[in-house]
Amino acid sequence: MKKIFLLIVSLCIFSSVCMASPVYYYNYSNTSNYAYEPNTDKNYAQSVAALVNRERLKAGVRPLILNPYLCNRSDIRANELAIIFAHTRPDGSQFYTVLDRRKFHYMTAGENAAAGASSPQEVVNIWMNSPGHRQNILNPKFRYIGVGYAYVPNSQYNNYWIQIFSD
Image (cartoon, helix red, strand yellow):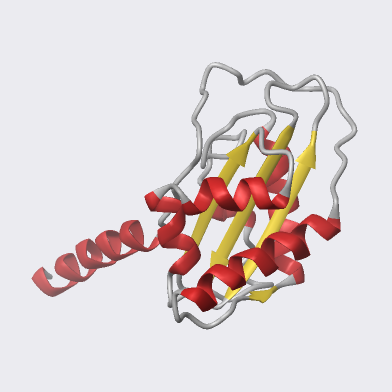
């Protein structure tokens, strides 16, 4: 019984450490729903991934693989940021619940979020100048990346960015 208890405690600690999730700016006061048609730009995903891989190569870390499933999930999260800018989803669940383990297998996931940046270069600069975001970007355990971008006019920040990382 003691071994089972220790195993459960160890797994809880491990999972909390593995879910690294820095965020650029929190604003919990803005939780209203927006009536909008989100605009996403797939070229932004490729541009952000290329800029991230340039930073990883400079640091001697293997490049990440841009994963279509993670990009799709990142687009969902980017649109959710206009509703609540946090690592929790509008329903209160954690960011990683956007990932379906039946469709995508992973052990560790991380998320970077940002709002207000108007270009891939600007958002990557913001993330690289933030210790927690930089840690996710340069984490050698991560192998895949998904990038999401949403332009939501008349929302608080208009531009919303997400990176989801996985092993």
